[in-house]
Image (tube, rainbow, N blue to C red):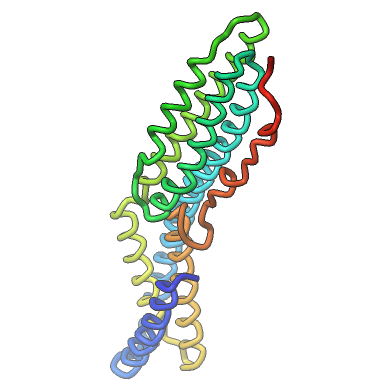
Length: 253
């Protein structure tokens, strides 16, 4: 759990209990228990639909971002291998070095910026150098054609995955939707506080769990809405653990 969650919980639970006790002292909640119960049911239904829709939306974006990172990592590993099948030793060395530099730049410079929620182009120059190195390889034999074609295709996949990753850094849940979630949460808690529980302890327990669960839902949504930060942060491990396993083998001749 994040620090924000615990701060919200520590502040919200006592505040909700105080409101509940004040209402019990100055208002006869038993008289309107039927009306308040219907209100809480309606708000609870709206809240469940709203949070369900939001969780599914942010989870979809989270998984799309994770897939884009993994596709980029897989594409780089495949690209490194494909260029080695072209009979151009100097071109292979240049292309493989460019691929490794690009990966290192993404992990070392672009990733920390993405964690901070900043769009960065730190590895853009390395990407273009990698693309130029692949496109500039000498294709001299019939055997080179399919290998180079696969390398170019894979380069396109890396480019698409990089573009998606850059877009997902900036996409966040709309502020109006977030505001609606907060208002619905407060309304649900206040409605629960208005219920006329005969037993004070039971009322306090129900209200406490309502606050706890509602804040936990908001925490999950906030965490998923920050794909590169939080408890479920997407890691740079798929890129960092690329070992380029053929590193010590000579290029095709």
